Length: 568
Image (tube, rainbow, N blue to C red; front, side, top):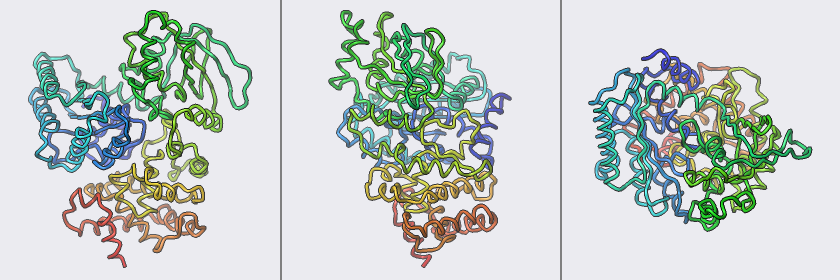
């Protein structure tokens, strides 16, 4: 492996505690991380998208709908059944080789695997991860009427550690594959790229560094002092520069992360309001009136630097203007040099100000309360509780806002956003490892579950405890203390483990007694690591004794209930 790629791989492995894996498996996860992370706005588990030794020529498989990795057919069908006809959907297929040489034979095997996955709807792959992803893909195809343009997009990445010089035979094979995929008619677009060592380096830096953008404005006016706001400006910016410098990343793709607070609110180009915006952009007569006809875009950043007419943003969020920004992006080839867009620029570190801005600017569109969960007091209390721990091995980080800890040297395995935290709570405190495993959306969409998991009366300790169990199990996997095949049972192990440590029945999550119940787990994890490891291994054996467990059984609640009943 090239020395530079090896250094990147070491950083990645240390951050996500993957030392127990061999180099090839580590590299597969690195590439999957680099390819999938820019496409999503919520966390995901690499184990859910990385195939195993029984794969069919694909090292990474993910179906993404509205910037979220879909883990089950049921979740896919639920999100596509909301009445909208413009969901963004794509399939990502990845192959990763540690070799510094590109081999046409390997490329052709990869192409054959792609075509089997995309076009063979009769045979299921042997690998459980690939089979599950294909089931989700087929569900999305069956719901194509709810997807923008009626078809999914396809993203293909072949990665290796050498330098890609575009050999003629490989380029010809790529062109022929794309033509066949287009002819089959299942995809609205096919994005195929070969990632060499330089491409891997750029992709990894994009996931690990703060987002920074600079744009030259036509005019900038400072606003008066505002409580909780360091600086605020009204700016008029050339629309083309706004799209190229702020909406586009280094590879020319749309920066999905900047819409993390309201990405679900984009209603598509055919929405009447958005259609009118598009017509204004394309009109020779009215495009110059755009800054007075449009309400503009509100941008919040913890670090805004204004030098003359140049504005630099770090880790910014577009909290209002999601519709306008997306329509500008879609019409970027129609933007003239004299077309302007107005920006409201706000620099603040105040979470209260940020929360008020997000609530106010999203209130124009009906959004369910659970989409504002990260802004609720319970989320603030969880963050404060996590931050109460000192900088030691037991310090974990609750990421209430997207990319909150990027670029700060925080190991990725220690960072828990709302989605992964919900999966941990579901396993440890709700006795629903099946939801953690394949149905995380239901933790939020089912009111009976979400109201229990995130009640304002819940004790903060439950969130830290469940994440601590997840983290320490990751350490055991990393140190090869747990058999690697137990990874598929990790959520179920977490459920069983909590009962074996703290006992049954478990108090209600709002009951004061839950503090003592949780503290038993924390004390075991921190103060008695050998006993904790022994209990984890015992739980592994319990599930191993069940014999061959199919993917379908593991997705059902009954398998855990069977084990729990046996516990007495």
